Image (cartoon, rainbow, N blue to C red):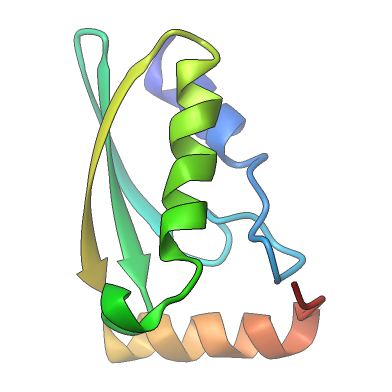
Length: 98
């Protein structure tokens, strides 16, 4: 699979509580492919310790990639203030709850 195919696949993964994909929300930011390994950078609006569903979000990506026998690793970061404001705006528009 190439990067475009992986991006399309990952763009289908919804946020558990917001009616947008993780990519549209800016949570999945950078995606790198090295041989058969995909590395994803997750950007969260707050430190990961303050995101109760962070592990659930990470696992949704891991499971999707594992279903295609694609090895996966990741890193996390906190969103910039601009990214965070965009995320919070979309959250407000499309909140569906857990």
